[in-house]
Image (cartoon, rainbow, N blue to C red; front, side, top):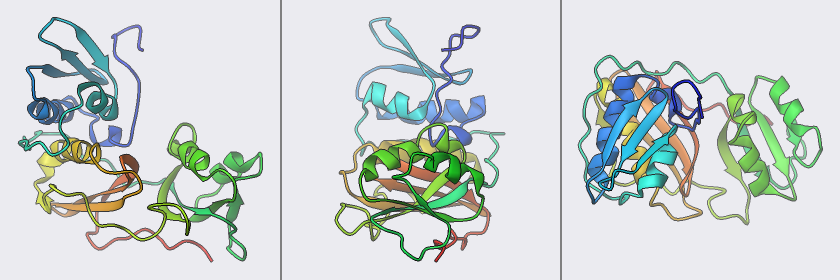
Length: 243
């Protein structure tokens, strides 16, 4: 909690898309429209305020926290209001990582996540890498998606023959348009968070939505966002895992 402004400094996968007040206001409108009871959701510095009909007020600092607090129906029909002047995030410069459950024998730049110093080793490189673990894949995935590692790496693939969702994609999130206007990207991100909240565990999705000359790409496992990014070239894909 920030003592000066009273807002939280939380961050999640959607934060880079919602750095402006117009962007957060558009996201607030989407979430408020999805809630099945009267609620006032407003953009605040670094997050949102939520005022319930009882007068109770909540301050949240991330889109994930906002969705969790209000629990709107994941399949709600919502508008996608424009956010004039809201900038798109720049290219994602974080290190692409494929997480493997098992051995990565013969793979160049493989990082053994069962070693104590694996986070430090992973943060020193910049090219695509493989992280392998034979013991605690869910714990390693959690570490990759939280601070400090999430600031340095993004998960682009999951490889594990026995784990649900760690393999082929199931498809894209349902109820998401194929294209939006660039000024609708903050609203789109709120819609993606909404749709993501209703997905079953173990479902692996990748959702790409065109936005003018760019595209928004969200990779997810169940309700968990693995990585979200802006792709300037609509045909761009992540680099293959090193071999």
